[in-house]
Structures are given as C-alpha cells and as structure tokens.
Image (cartoon, rainbow, N blue to C red; front, side, top):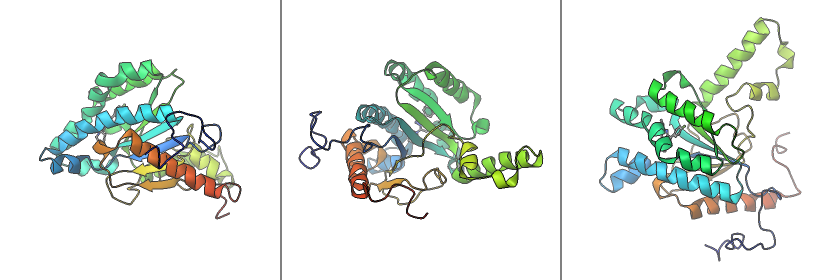
Length: 262
Ligand code: V0D
C-alpha cells in the first residue's frame, strides 16, 4: 500500500502529499455503505449480523477520515426505499442508531466529532429519535469532523421538499419566481450549511446513486468498489482519497469543478 501510494508514507511529509490545505483531500466525503447483508450471507450469518458489523466500520472510517483531514463525512444509513424491506429487518435497523450511540457516543465526543442527521424524521420511532437528538445536542459545539447520517433520506423527496418550501414563499409573495436560482434551491435542501460532497464512495459493487444526494452530487467525483462495507478498511478509504487526489491533479490548472458544462 505505501509503495503503491507514496503520498501516504506513514505520516512522513513528502512532496505533493495531499493535505487539507492544498485541496487534494476531499473536504466532504459521502458514502453509500452497501453490501452488509451480502457480507453476512457469504458467511452463513443472518443479514442483521452484517448491519451490526457495519457499525464498527463506521467508527473506524470516521476516525480515519478525521485523521486524513476530511471535514464532513455523510453516511447513507437508511433510504426512503428501505421501508420496503421485511418489517423484522426494518425494526432491527431502527434500533441501530441507539446501539451505535450507546457504544460510541462517548468516544465521538472525546474526539470532538459533531453528529448530525438529515432526512425525514417523521417516521423514525420516538426512542430512536430521542437517542439521535441527544447525540446531536451533546456534540453540537464540537469543532472536529461532522459525522452526518442520512436517515430516512431520499434525493427526490429532498428536492420536492425544497420546491414546496419555495413555492409557498412565492405564493405568499415573499419571493419572485425570477429569484429562484441554484443557490436558493440549494439553501432549501437538507444540507444547507454543508459544502457539496467532493467524493462519493459506494461499497458493495453496485454502480448507481440510488437516490442519494442527487442535487449535491452534480460535480462530485464518484468512486465505486466491490468491497462490502463491513470489509472496508482504513486502507480502502486511503485508496479512494488517493484516487480522488490523482483525478484532482489531472484537472489541476486546466478546469475547475463545474466548469465543464458552463
Ligand atoms: C445499517 C450500514 C449507524 C447501513 C450501517 C436506522 C445500514 C449500519 C446508524 C446511525 C445503520 C444513525 C443515526 C445516528 C447514529 C447512528 C445507523 C441506520 C442503519 C438506520 F445518529 N449505523 N446505522 N442507522 N446501519
């Protein structure tokens, strides 16, 4: 690994090492954590064993991202489509936020991580919400990495929600239709205060976005890997970040992001 990717030379500063300052480390990494059920089935375990293992990966990857200088990590934990799964699996999944926070919140606080959530919270069970709200509250003034969980999240639903909010303001004549632009729409999404993801990682071998952050991913570098999420290691995150920095370097000075189609 260190031979293939000299940037990550066991912390030794070498030329061209990507840093948060030179812009080669993605500020915002979003991850579709896929392959948990298949990871378990491959081992003859129930799917839920994969979800449990997935939480350990979240913890490890959060700290590695922080170590690399990533500022925001958004994780797709539950999509609006996931309600179609068997009730027993949905019930199990809904207990994971509580379990995750019970196991790791103290350590996240110690490491100055700020927990956030984006999605439609109206269908999330009350005890789950209580744990989530407490985590958000207890980490809200932390200044380290933002760990943003997409929970009951859907990209279409997010855009529809933004459009409704804007339509209401137009109806009330508080804004003119002509003043609706990209910035205004972005400001009404569920991630108004976050930069767009620089890098999207999808584990588990599927090569699609599955309704994740459709607006925000317009210019994001996409990275797909066959590795199942429970098997995704610190080295795999480094590989993705290395690939990102390589693509950025090739673009360097020629184009900036978003200029291709303008
Ligand atoms: C299962 C892989 C952490 C994806 C990761 C309810 C599917 C493990 C959380 C979590 C899930 C959410 C909010 C929060 C703290 C933790 C989580 C769900 C599923 C869906 F504030 N893992 N995790 N939430 N899985």
